[in-house]
Image (cartoon, rainbow, N blue to C red; front, side, top):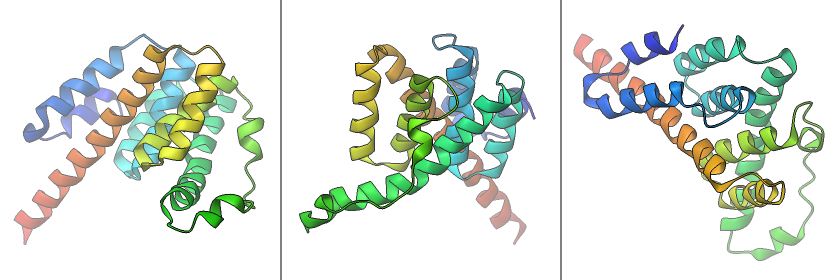
Length: 181
């Protein structure tokens, strides 16, 4: 599925979402690996199979097998970390913050691709999942690596657009299902 086919599934009530998806697809602010890795990691984070299939299909032509696997790893490891660290942050009992996480996350240290790209993908997924602790941690690593605030903002903007595409398509699916009843 192409970006155009994905856009065709976005209902008219979400015209802005459709336009944002178009602008994201043509944005050349980031390297190809960073951009298309974001497509994959963020699509997976939306948990929408239509969006995931479409954006992974588009990205596959631009990513090496290692980069595609790393983008998927970023989504998977952040799914775990975002739940855990959001809990630690939000729990009233601050003792949890002093306890070891005891979660295996070696892929963060050795992602198999440029570390900054992996961190950018992890940040974007953390934004979708709403983990402030992880957002702060990944943003700091990116800043320390010399990644510009403009690139970081672009990654989070892509995450917001991809999430909104998933929500718009799901809302249209619900409307269709209700009309069929």
